[in-house]
Length: 461
Image (cartoon, rainbow, N blue to C red; front, side):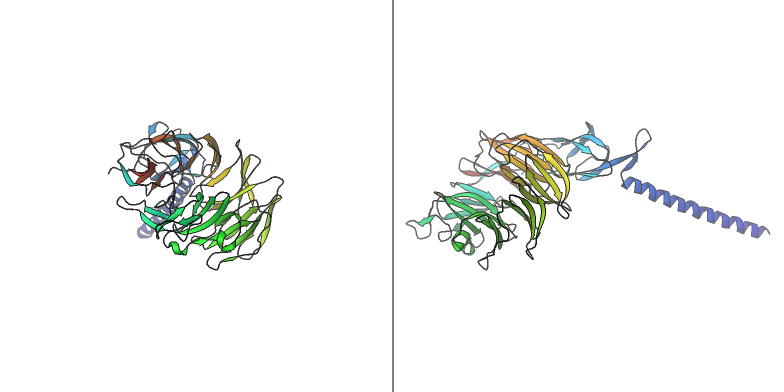
């Protein structure tokens, strides 16, 4: 009898421990699910839902200060931390570098990414990369190659991602429009002016619009094999008002001819029939072209030529297409505002008003920022925070330093800003304003000074 009683007690203990274990597992999973969803117990022992801050910096390992206090367990950048919903001040510092700061707004249950902060070394090594007596330069999308031109038909390319590279000559005597032979048999004189330079994603082909005394010519320059370059204007004997590269190697183009949209097959030297008439603005992504006419915005599928009307309009509109993380957007700029639509169903996402007359629209390299500008007046839309900021640069002449920073040269001073005008810093002096400034491989800062390409080291050499 005692044996049976002990056996029943032992079975009861086993059942109770299993029940407790199941309850503990359920509680642990529930707590973890709440934590993952952003819920936390605050200092008043109340449950609140938090957001998650993910912060990176260049260089890595910067000290993080949140709300004027060192972060408790987020000591360095390139990690994540939960924060209460609302406004927070962030400051990054690193010994030997300048600082970076900004105020952000955390939304409960959502991730806020800060991937672009850049700190600059205070005492940078400065040297002359090489002397350059030219008049134009442009930098590839990966910021590893610079194309340099002058008043002859011998141009140069330069590898920016090396401190021991030397310029490589490109002999373009039979390639360039608006050129003629000089006394030398291997070079000539170039009398054209480069108005625009757009690189293909392969970082080898450059679409150049070259003008001379009112005449214009479009040239796809192959920087690796110049003999395979393609003069679009000469081949089709046509005056294209706009040309855009459609693929990664500039084998396919979209062009506006007499107000109509066409596609050009470069290897086949063929131009398509009219794809859309009376096109005022267009942009493309993933084999789809969004375009506007005076009265409608439509989307064209290049694969089958199908056109779908998206929206009737009664005022001229510019259109852009961008992708940020997994979301694709169509932006429509008109009447002092930009409206964002989800590309898959053209559902309106947000509308933002601004006070400048758009002259140009630029999408940042990573798709996160849309800059609308006229002269030195800029309206920048951040797709991460869904906020639009209007600000003014130091001068009308400015460009993108990297995927998220803008530079402007005033009185020889190189001013840099975040995309929205914050974190303004003066980096260098005696910088030429009519040449590009760029950062490559997060190692070098390049600019021009007194006929030379200058290289500054962004790390301790």
